[in-house]
Amino acid sequence: KAGVTQTPRYLIKTRGQQVTLSCSPISGHRSVSWYQQTPGQGLQFLFEYFSETQRNKGNFPGRFSGRQFSNSRSEMNVSTLELGDSALYLCASSMVPGNTEAFFGQGTRLTVV
Amino acid sequence: ILNVEQSPQSLHVQEGDSTNFTCSFPSSNFYALHWYRWETAKSPEALFVMTLNGDEKKKGRISATLNTKEGYSYLYIKGSQPEDSATYLCAHRNNAGNMLTFGGGTRLMVKP
View 1: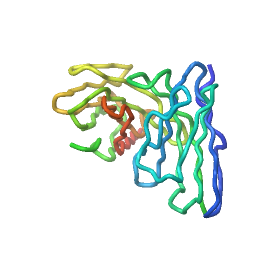
View 2: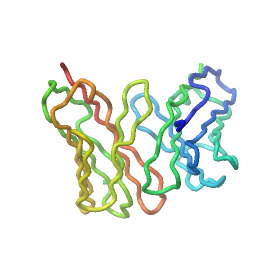
View 3: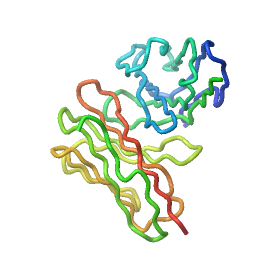
View 4: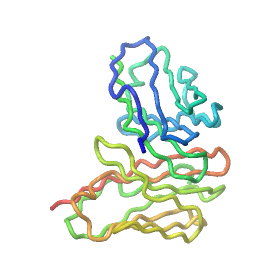
């Protein structure tokens, strides 16, 4: 069974650009969550999608957005990139939201220069 | 407690030592407590999901306990091995927003 796949693994962008990151969940999983990790910070929750609907959103500006497709694949988009957006972005999939285990991908390392 | 807090931040032990660390979380509106192990350059790996007060879970040499009334969980590693070196994360899910809130992690280093 394939794990959670995130693409790309590494990305370098310049300030002001926008970026789209992709997450393919484990087959059969319908819930996808996104997290940001910056140096010195723990994992910060961005948003959670289930059945193509955003269920929860963390405390991030509107430049951060996401969506989920009918095949449960999810994308997150960051517009007007800032230097502080440089981080590891992780996505996690689970069968449904709630107390079930969440399985993480290896993340996308975004560097904004 | 408003946030999820883990202590200590880092820990160095010798191979063979047993160790434990703490996760503190808000006791109100509790739904679930997750533990993850995160090795450098890999994905966080789920260890346990705990939901009931008094829960105890075990996987090999690693075990965890949960006290939802006072808002803490302990993770124990018996006879630490160098391959146990990783960051151990706990995450709390409440029954309001239903999202995971992570602690800052405990970085464990086991010396051979």
